[in-house]
Length: 264
Image (tube, rainbow, N blue to C red; front, side, top):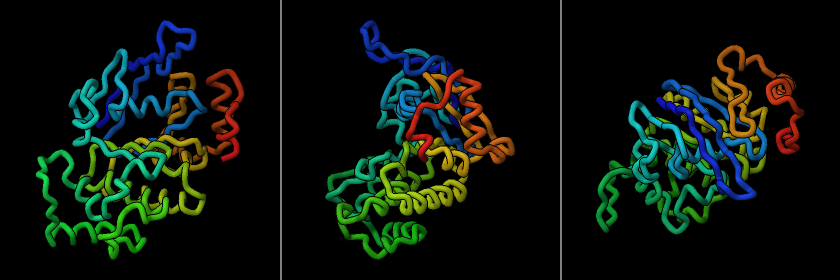
């Protein structure tokens, strides 16, 4: 469903701060794969996600979704294939628009829209039905401005918007990092519920090793622009945080230096 081949990208080339962010990264996700991606700051996780999303274009290599080459396709055209939830809950929604207007934007993504809004009763009923699955009471607040919602409610809405049209690939960019632990747990539970129900091919970037181990069927670890660990199935299910630390030391030749990863 997602194929990434030999991706290279360098930031600030030819300058004293030149950074080789990705060095020939390749990976393939089958339909329904749910991969968690971990690594320290600067490992290349977000860069890989941004290249998949179209926020960045690689210097070399190819990205395809379901057999369609999207390597140089602009971000707005990739919207028909991809759903994305950002770390900041404010980035996935329009603050001054109502809940139902935000859902309408997501539902009509890729379609030609006029200047007038018209949400019929059938469409409104669909939104209420999907909102009810979040179990947050938002199905009774369709006309409320999104700016009135809490961070957790807004992130849950962003998740619903990103998956409303069942994208071929769902990208989760540390989407619980800005939430308190209780709310983060709830959003992750909703994520797994939606991903499993619709069998969505998913890539989740996280700093939290326990979340990376607990969620998904596959785990990748990145270091200095390379994938140094890729485990799945039963092998992943049996791993512990200590196992990951040892694997990192073996693959990279040094100790895990990210306090943020260790503390989580």
